[in-house]
Length: 213
Image (cartoon, rainbow, N blue to C red; front, side, top):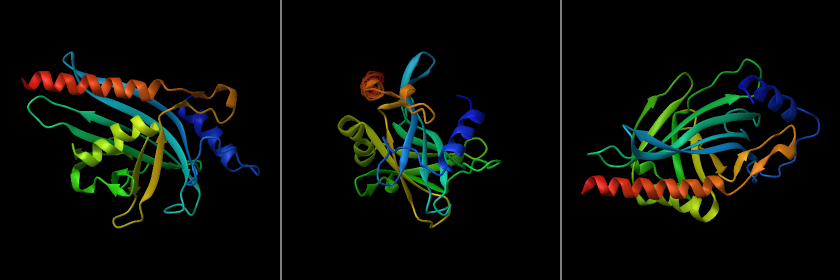
């Protein structure tokens, strides 16, 4: 579904008198719309793994409870001669017509009640309304991604739109390949993405280890 059709469907469904079923939502009312796992290559070498995601959530922190659309990616990357890094790219967009993507001020991965704030390296604009945040490879980051996905088939991040603003918490369910809000019979739920993430990360770590020898 292209973006214009996606937003038309989302706008109609979320502002209807009768709300949609929260079959795949958690108590914070976040719905994962899609996920996709992709290996990342440079010059024919496997250098990492990426999870692309889309979600919608109610936003009491910055939009008075109105719904927002979030999209971005989570990546593990290893460049020869450098430490492995973890990055998270995010853009946030209201469902109202003519709304634009806005980049968050800060993003952190979450492992239980912990965040990987101490691992933060830098952030950069990454297209209009998007920002990418880089973190060092740490135990919290590993537990928040590799560990959480292995155990729970999801990962969770938090973001703030303003300096010192309240952090919104967003869980992403990797079993959701595609959530079709207009026709639930076309929703695709499977173990493919969690399994592909585990396999990709295992291959990436092995490849990094081989290049260090």
